Image (cartoon, rainbow, N blue to C red; front, side):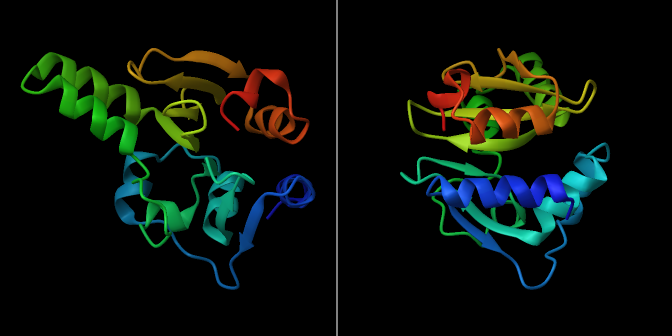
Length: 165
């Protein structure tokens, strides 16, 4: 894991976050690797070597291998917000296709239930971080220019992310 990710985890611990580092790398499921082939390698390593990372109130968490594999104690699937959107779309095939295309290029990084359902995701086309929330998850907006900037916003308790983390 890169020093930047290690420093982020150390900072989160100091802020009262629960952080679990895995003793053994937990490879992501093939379905995730196929769906997100553009996942940056350093982020993949971070995800595969980190267990649960949850805010002090346990209302926000990073999407790590434990979340992707369903081995965490979380009540939500890694793609819960996508599933909710698809359920709401019912039989509208055009809307369902649009939702799936959105999530095919947006890798969830943070999920939150702090102020309603929300997420931070990596746009794999631009490598920028977007945020979205219920009820229209796919109407996202730019939050940060990179993963490292997003983690900096979280660690520094920036007002732009405090609503969700």
